[in-house]
Image 1 (tube, rainbow, N blue to C red):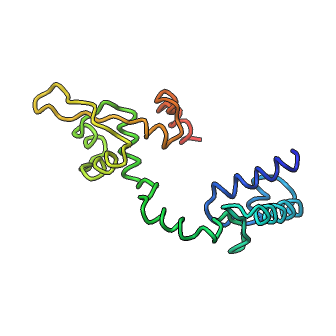
Image 2: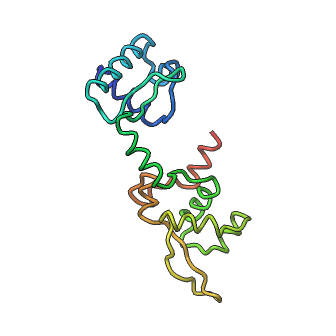
Length: 176
């Protein structure tokens, strides 16, 4: 691997971490010698400072972390205060998985699988536009049918629903 690729690897690891990463962790993941990693990190820190980039790499809390440039703090704060959290709760993820694998599905079927009332979670998923109402089921009471949206695909980095792992694949992964 060339130096440019090694730097890019370190950047990618720091970017996705979102928290300080210890040098030993970076060493174990990248399989690079600690001395070389330290030099790469020093070079990256210098590169970001010289570019006066919107991002910096800093040594903090016994590790390294990619952070925003303090010069842009007021705008970052503004963004953070206006945007809703991007993370989904475990109940929301569970509900979303059930909808994704069983769509179109009515809330009663969803609740039968989950074993709990899902009103709040379904409302949250609708508000976040991860699920949508597809229509009504042709049964007494005509309950609403739910399915996933384009935003669902985007959130999980999928081109289409067929890219979801099959339940057999998930079971094999869990067993491994």
